Image 1: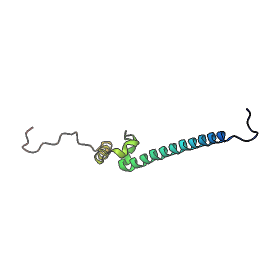
Image 2 (image 1 turned 90 degrees about the horizontal axis):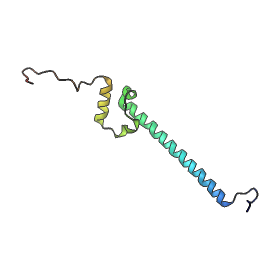
Image 3 (image 1 turned 180 degrees about the horizontal axis):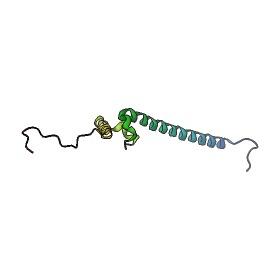
Image 4 (image 1 turned 90 degrees about the vertical axis):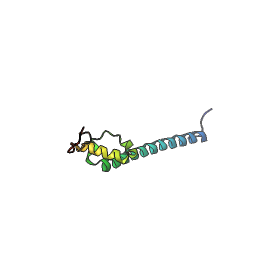
Length: 95
């Protein structure tokens, strides 16, 4: 059972079209993922400021972080965190 000379049958044409469509979708999905990852990086930098580079947060998680977590992360890396220090004693305070 030979092929017709120079012409692909309709099944071959359909299989080729499906394969091309699948490749196109895979590339489109990869492009969407790359855009989302880049967008996460772009969101992280303004929120964390110059400390974004030092943060160990995965950029994919920045959109789920609370405002308090973002502030804490900025303070932690700025070196200005005094939350673990013992506050000074007030006059007459007993501990």
